[in-house]
Length: 432
Image: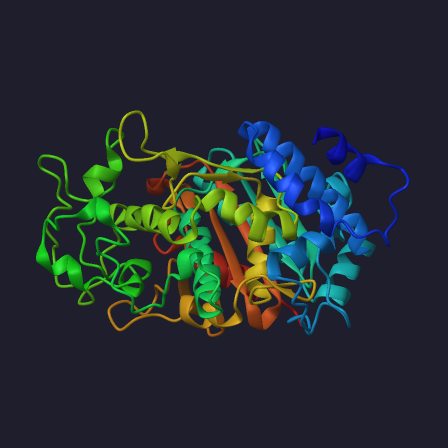
């Protein structure tokens, strides 16, 4: 069998016209009998071969695989006739109008103004505003796909940051993809799912059975994604965090709901923790590998990891979901750029466009919170991922603008309404 596998994958006589269909069954059975590392090596190599046979560039092949080869018109109308989407950082990364080192000169500032409609000197003033909090920090501003402002103190563009609760927007996006899969009938075991699905059932969350509060039976996926499930505004402990979230540990404040589901916005990490377990059951795998295949690899996010929750004799481990995604400012900007284009990347619809209509729509109980995205109108729509220590990513669709702020200063060092003020200041630097 190994000889067949080697001949299939590595023979120099193989051309693009050779069909490898006859080998699929053998390779799959052979890989299934190996340890995970060996299986991964074989299947990864097969993926590379498929990319070669498909006559697609490797990056586009990943996009095709993530979307079922459903290419659509790019959502961008201002980034150029065909749209612009940055290659991975290892292949050059974001295009930039800035010098490699130091501030731009007069001509470069003029180019930024003419090509991207931004006043660089005014942007520099925004950087001064953000760094007043002290500590290590960074600010990255991108318009029309061009880096027009980038500053760091005590770090650089390659420094990775814990995005804290900005991670929730990634979890929400994964659910957006899952909802699209469900609509297309592609969930494992033919599961059904929509926003009104009641999730506290023995099929979806057997870990919650028996229910510690009968009102939990009324909680829908929509409630969990919009923080209106009725859970206390608490965060899981380090030990048995998921059992605690399900109200199965002594004294857990999650055992009883604070209010009726859907009646009030309550920002609860404990409530969001349910989404981690639920996702694994619906998708058949954890959040991180799912997003790696469906989003990170296709859009070129390479420097990223996700802290886990649970395990060590308790439920889990799973990707934390409500926190703990660690990446660089430029990689987080890719995620924001995907959102800017309503889930479309280089013509491939990775995330259903309608997901953003839902995720960026506030509720009657909190008009500034959608589905794990914060939103405002200044006066144009601004959507942002929001994490502790102001590790945020902003999307301003009407201006084809995204920006990322990272840092390690704690909340008391920032002025009130820092997020809104930062957005207002960046938008104010637009001259055309």
